[in-house]
Length: 344
Image (spheres, one colour):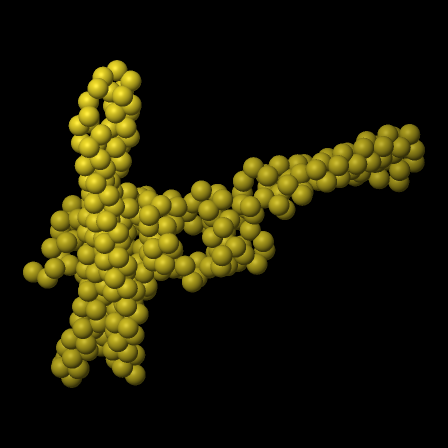
């Protein structure tokens, strides 16, 4: 059994594929900032993405409801007073027309004041999408189990290797962002150079292409094209293997982070031990005479310095692993070339 399949069975073989990963290039930064302000979870490492569709391209939140709802209600009331006032005026009932006209004018002024107060708040709200960005958000591209050939159900259900592989990639990404090392200040510069969302989405895009192309190839299979179809499918298998290597390298990266996690915990405990040792030494200096205590605690400090040295080495190794991780662009180009040759 291939390595990626063993990983899939261990990491997600017993869980249903539930994910909805955004292709970052399909929307602009303004849209993502607005989604972040709304609290949407759409990244590859999100533990449980919010399954929103049409609502992600609309402005439906507190400030928009106040502004749009309030002005709409005020406009309706103004029209409600203006209509009978106009009828009364045409019918010769001047007093009634004046009364309705006055009430309409009052509601119009009130609506204007309300809009002047709530309008700027809505326009400055970080959750707001402009008209152009609403269109962009509606056209966002997503990677889902269905787009990778998955159909739920016991009787008519089916799964594909592409879906399983991407499911594994998503699970690894979720594990990566949950490690202590990923959020630790010591890796701040390193993490800023590793675009996890782009890495996972790029795998998903290629896998979607493989699924679509394989279905098209299978659709022309007959007695005359069987040999060509088998040749094409073998070429697709080469491209798929490239994707599998990418996901396997992600898992190796995750294992490096786990090693760093252990060292960070040891360093934390060593530093905590040193702090406690200093407090104990302070107590001894004020309550008893122990000439050997200072030397003993100095030896403990050496342990902490040793842990720091090990962590520095691990961070350097992690940078090298990330370089291999990012080198996927070369392998991706090779896989894309194989797909392009098939399409040609």
